[in-house]
Image 1 (cartoon, rainbow, N blue to C red):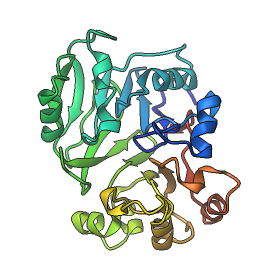
Image 2: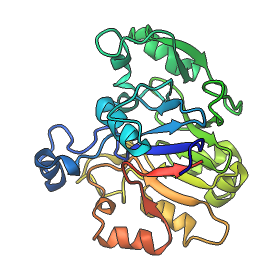
Image 3: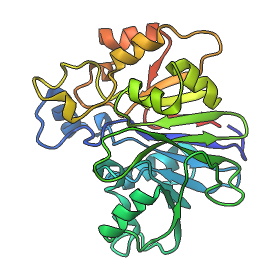
Length: 292
């Protein structure tokens, strides 16, 4: 990619718990404990603007490793410090790295932070706001996280277990391509009803996106071995594939992210991964870059 392009780096594809997940002795988690190349970090991405500024979306507990991934993928050395932070909601896996911007680590002051009013309220209640200049984002109002970055962000309201705050997807509008970042929502029926669209395909078309990174937490409803799945509602990949079917001409690229460590699609040799690929869709890859 040429200098001056807007680039997005995928620096995490896992559900909030990551892999290895605390307290888990499944094969995938045990393997990741013993082989750092198998670690899956909680979902997050970094965007580099045309002016070289860098912008973090989601601040996870794996922030040091993820900033290293972004720096390496962008050819910016061994690590980097973001010029802004944007948050989709206040669930722990998406904000538990926010304290690392404070005096105990990076020591930042006045860093632009973009989130909804309810997310900013949660951070204030937890006394995590000191390093930031807080900016309340309203859905449907595109903004530039810093002047000269060459792209815009737009928050899109989605329904998702809003115990602490509301939840948004983020539309990233670049000079060449537009991307939807949708790591979490409860189910397609509620989401499509809220946005007033009849199908996933129609919604993505209405947003004008070229790439859609969407919630792929679980493959199926029986994945947690008897655990009540209604406590962690997400549309399964199986459901999403049933609604999308095979990729058609003019469709955006659909990339599944926010995968739980139990999801069999994480195994590239599985029948589930094969089914997904055969339909024309894919799983996110840490360190991959997308031109915007």
